[in-house]
Image (tube, rainbow, N blue to C red; front, side, top):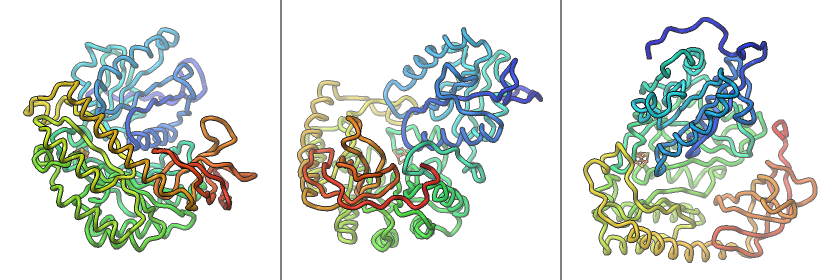
Length: 463
Ligand code: SF4
């Protein structure tokens, strides 16, 4: 990035005195949604306001994810759709941010010359100046990774919702062979406890009663001598916060101290997303996951011994290069043995830039991968069905999100185990309230019931 900074006020629309409006479209995971809040915060401080649609914006940013299949094509397709707004407003700035920035920087000039800015995940502090330089020819590219950047001191601009997200850790040191994250998000670093607490207190003051602590391997968090268990204890002391979640932990980073902390802290939800990926030791080793099936089973057993009602979900990839029928069966066996409450299941597909894509030929045919995935889905559905059915007759506290998708007769929210619950709402219910719901029926992905108690949130500042 070599262009000199302009000195004009970048937050003003060209030809108008009003502030420039920015629209950010987010792809991918919770981490990216949290980064969009961060970018909105940075741009708000620089004088921008938020547009509610791309056609009303002076700046449109696509906050990208490199994890999904065909992600690059999807982003180029979406960027070309934005071109029509540029015909209507030649001063429109189009930018690409996030995980795909590093990857796209070489091809952007040729494939999408109308893209003005490319900014990687560690460049968001500099967004206002990057946008200021945009539009004078070549795209402005800033994809430098910064192993110290945790965005300390920047106030994110929060989205609507009842659960506030706080990124406590950026980057990843694990280098799983199928994953691009360490290359595009850099090395692992933790935000300071002071910064985490500042953000959690801000969320509580806004009326949020639940926080979700985010990191690629969140339980390997460390800042000086504070580890993840210590941080959890600190976060639970914040007044107004009743539920604390965290995602996604890494199996072998569950220490006895952390398990004990989870068991002791009532505010930490008894819900855990623990990626298994495969039930075969050879495949786990080829994935460079750093644990064996035996390790994984020991950890889930220890967690269940300490927290008997903990809900455990997972991620699984089938059809990894070289996966045999026996290895596929081994995955099914582990899924049955652990009994996950629910799972995100994928057929393997290569991600450009990963070790696996360069060194491990994708050996299985697509129909074979699909067939394996279907077997896994069928098994998991039957397990989920039993897990959800086991809640019938129980009473669960639900954090209310709002009316269900099919109308106001039923409202929706999440139980402590992060299960979706639909319920007949009590009078005066509002998003952010807690209701106790008696579960009457269940499917393999939803609980249905009726509210029998209602605790409106005390601080309704956000409502
Ligand atoms: S732990 Fe593995 S899968 Fe998760 S972000 Fe890091 S490299 Fe990717």
